[in-house]
Image 1 (cartoon, rainbow, N blue to C red):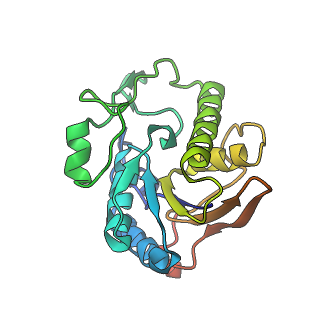
Image 2: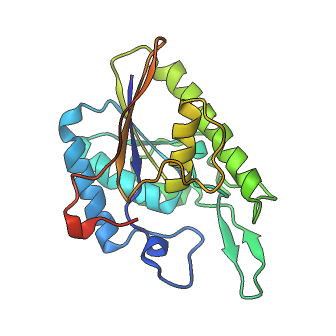
Length: 224
């Protein structure tokens, strides 16, 4: 099985827009990045497309999915570190539940949703605001869970799977894939917006074919 791990396109938070959004959307350049990424995957014969339930990944996956003619399968564990929190004016962090099933379908009409995306949202893990080590460990466990899911549903096949994730959780997933300890600060495997990393695995071996490929982007559209 081959996995194409894709970071989402540039979000308003990546752009530096203030105030920071709890669940930011793509910028105009982020949408263009997603289109370029989709075009670069057209000839890769992708058989399944996954994405996280956050707005910027859903928007990226919708664009890519339209180009490669695949519906996005939402996998909650691909979400970014810490889930969704809103920082109030007094500095306190307030947990938000994330997009509901109906809201996701407005963004991604063809999205295939698991049961853990509910009519109230999907992020209900209290206690992670400001807890870097806790967020790091959760991202590592989520990475292991996604790898196990891939092994169960796509392992030892010739399938080519794409997954739209995030800078932090994507790096954690790569660490988990190779049996590395969790990465506090997600600096081990950095990825640009719509950078593509290709992982290959079977019963015999696990291999990083390439990391953070951005050749589909014009130089002026490379963002982090």
